[in-house]
Amino acid sequence: MELFLRRKIFFTTCTVGILYVSNDITLATLEPGENIPGKELVPYGNYDLVPYTSPTHGPTWCLHNPLLHVYAGFGKYAPPPTMATHTFIELHAGNYPRDTVGCILPGQEWSGAPWVERSRSAMTQLFKALEWGSLGHTLLVRESPDRVEANGKPMIDRAELGLPW
Image (tube, rainbow, N blue to C red):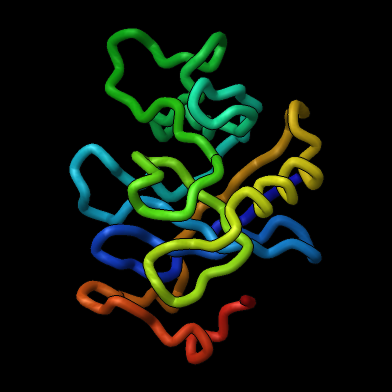
């Protein structure tokens, strides 16, 4: 299955996006802000989703694309020993900017504030749609053509943005 993530709203502390999973499933996402040292956004591009059991988050997926220096980080997905890379970039439950160090947090909806809501419910939908443990899933990460700079704004009027939630 191919998932499509469009980064849309850029707060100082986080980035909010839209994750298109299927015709029936559209989720909100939360990632780090653009310029937070040690909490970088993964580069725009295409990633394999590799099933992973995280010691912190349980069953999840890691992003993997060696051409972008992003590695799932384990076994045959480990980076070469001399290469500076992003590793263990997970798609896992979480609602707030403090819950991510570079990972992607899905949520059922976004209220206009710099967080997502009902993340565990969104992960349950992903487990069903992707049949956790199976391979062959891809995540395409892109910037939205109608990018919104929200820096300095505590809330955004989501209705005027035409978002699906």
